[in-house]
Length: 141
Image 1 (tube, rainbow, N blue to C red):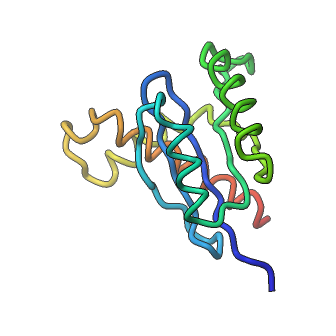
Image 2 (cartoon, rainbow, N blue to C red):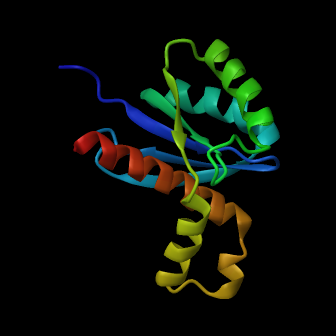
């Protein structure tokens, strides 16, 4: 039987990056952590050395008119470097246009207090979880 690997999702940000991961059966997306973007590459290298990861998803920030957002200028070089550093793990872009809006809504509906909703790290982690959950649901159809 094939080794069950996790799928890891990244909500890449200028300062901080939210990370979510599935269970090994790839049924559930869970927020993992938020790391300073400057430490992201070493965090990922360390994580995949300890956990089986079969795919990495990177949120693709598009504007409503479908044009790439300003953040793409930072994401593309990162993805290039990631593919070099972890050549055995496929890296895939997924549309993340509405995730931060959904993350805020999830926090509101979850009854999180205003202070928690202003915790940008938490928003990033929830956004990564939503990216991952959307991906899992799209694969189940």
